[in-house]
Length: 64
Image 1 (cartoon, helix red, strand yellow):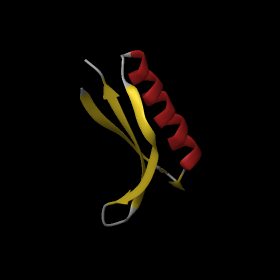
Image 2: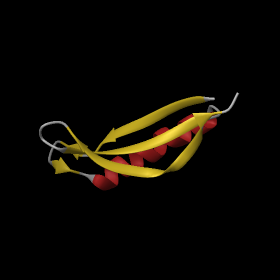
Image 3: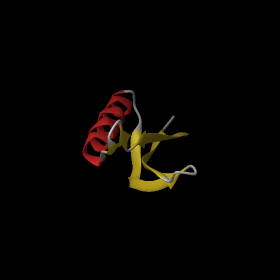
Image 4: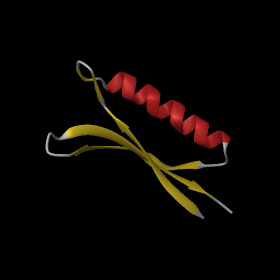
């Protein structure tokens, strides 16, 4: 089984933009599903970096 995590930064040019980040994450997840990947669990939200930039994370698996 293969494993990957899709990461989407929630910031745009004018600050935090969760709706846009959700749409971008959904598009990447749909693309990976079309290549045989399956979402594992739900979307996680976390902060990274010294500026505590919010990110969305989606774990994906691909069965062999």
